[in-house]
Image (cartoon, rainbow, N blue to C red; front, side, top):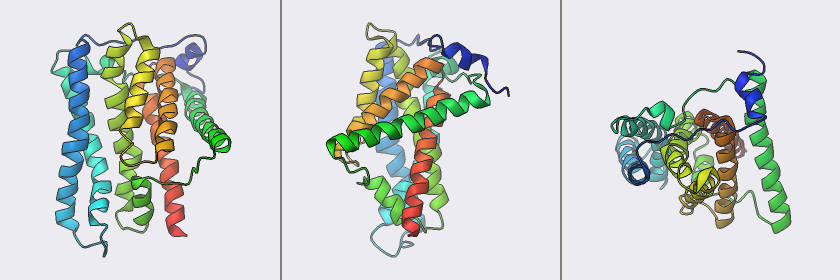
Length: 258
């Protein structure tokens, strides 16, 4: 791998994203809704129930169900990713093109710049907004509280795997995969697709996160969408999302250790 790849050089002058989705808007909306429901309403509860049956009572308190749900994020995310691929293929389209899963040639420094730039930028933005509006960035949602609660759990690595692998894969494919391409091909364009998918992504966290965090996630979604459009690959947003969640998991584990 080179230090600076051709795609990174090209992205400095123009956006590389080329939306492709021959399925049409309505079928794409149907797939989006289906993926979201399958992940949130079917797979996570189903895997959670199975894990609960196998491990009930291991926490020694009333946190068995929360622990089971956190452990379910990894398998649910992996299965959702597979379903997203199959759903596009069954419609006769190329999943790699529709889901923008071409691996970009960014080079080592290019990848570091993309992922590191995202991490630094979003942290700086969050700190600025917290200072201006008095947000408490330490206020935690349900997932964060659970992650801290089970920081010493022998299966914590699987909980972390769900945050670092399962959630980024599923969420990026659901919100910035085929539905993003379908919306970008309408008069909304990539800007409208970015706004709409970021809003939907943020709202899905409203049940487990404080309201101000939902707003911050909307801004994060906009930045992830910009990275998708700039580099033309969902792998970039998956990597950035994974690194953000990984750093969060490390921080939460450190708090649990204290």
